[in-house]
Length: 516
Image (cartoon, rainbow, N blue to C red; front, side):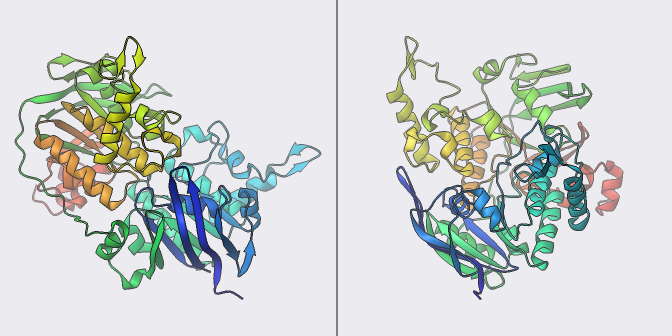
């Protein structure tokens, strides 16, 4: 019997213009949590997609329990008890939770779908693993944390023993991350084996047994987590020492460049207010962070400020110009840049090339068009400059279709486009979601540079450390209202966490030990 439940030996996979995996060997023990770490575009998701049957390797073999196996598609993977939770969930939004869980593994009788036994099995799995879901809820009506539970239950429903998690915490709140980590530990205790792709070094240190590091498609090494440090892993990943300290000078705030007065925004579905009487301003030369638990009105606030969603009442100004009911292009032309929360829905046209995506906001300018015809030589010259400046990794350069790029490199493309516009106001929502530590370090430097050049930056992030490290002032949002404003220099995670959970200022001061 082999010591390893899965072995991927000498795996090589090539795409046009790039070797995604270059002779990589990965070995997974039964009952271990094995992290896969690497920069954006290092080949992690490609390697796991080969194990799950989405791609076929150009060279190398896969062994299950010491025997060579061939995995031509995900059905083959499931038959070998291999399951995968993808970074971008594979769910049918108009189907219910139960229908998504059983999709592809349905039981029928005389051509009629049998749901009763499936429902009972799903409910039993929910109780066994503490993954509570509402079987009859539509996917489009539940949050991302609940959607991830659905993806995990899809694996458990199929009795998978090898569980692959691709960037599983990228869209989760801190509480949901803790819940997921506890679930993963529970799976491992039961003897399930977990492959865990992540950029977050603290998560590896908290939950993984071993970690394999990839860099530019090559395997750098496998180490025991107990025998290494965050600094050593970061250096293995990017090939240099990485600074985890965000350095910035004292702010020199000028005039208000973004003003929000008594803003109300209704939700899309039920018409109830999701943002209630919000007022604040962001001055040139400062970063104002918004901290809050996901689902407390951040999305609606940002979409109202950028023209993606209508305002019910109140006023929004960019400089002296009122933009309360302005179009998205009018916002952009007045100097607003927006790094969106959802890079696929609002950040990119996935079937356009990288070059085309990098001019989405200014393709109509004379530099990029003449007589109504696009000047692709100028578009691709501009793209090449941004690709180089922001280290956007793409197999065919500016001609790469955005859909084929890794999630982290898609994110870097959006950040590059928005910052290249030299905006007066930058609204950055989850700007480092899915990025590796080297890219996070660089993007943070760029945001601080935008602030130091006199731009107004509104930062919205679920990463409390990111908000605390980058911001000059922090606003806390709870249930659609701004419930506190804190000087970032003196803010503590405990105090902010209390505000985020709805505690009053007096309660927060008492519970965090601050004199009221």
